[in-house]
Length: 255
Image (cartoon, rainbow, N blue to C red; front, side, top):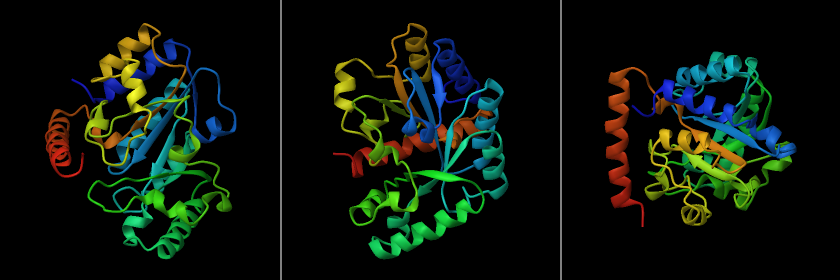
């Protein structure tokens, strides 16, 4: 079965075996290693799943970055602190254009309020937008008027990574070729990666490519840990839900 915690662990081990260095997003922005993986985790739901991922990484001696939303289903104070204590980076997974109905000024105030709240718990140097396919707003539009760097934020992945130099893999839609149905989580370099045959349908495909040393030297992964389960009931429920959601997006949102 794919998208299990066991499969996630196997993926990490395959990357370690190929001598990848693991950096948080903040570390990568400051001084990227030559052969490096950035493990980004969007904590949309079920923060206990993210804590499990964080513990797996800590046991393997590697670090990741975890972006928390300012909503009850993500914002678990104890888990936020525990993940940071394990040595990982915490960031703000902002969605202020959505929550403020597209009002830029209100969204800016809301962004600063929740960033300050998160900084009272842990150190925060990076942010990442949350993309809801049901919203008519793109949360990145906030930066058409305001500047996150004015708040001592050093990076936002969609602005501060050169994807001509960094290969991007995301489990959006519970699939590794999710750009086909993704509304927000996509980058324009996808077409060139397709031409380079850097297309993966399963986690095993990535593991096999890694074992053959065929992956690019710089990679950013995005994981949504709530999608990864060893329990068969939760695994099946997530599979059915995401397949239905992808079907709806393909008809309503994706051109």
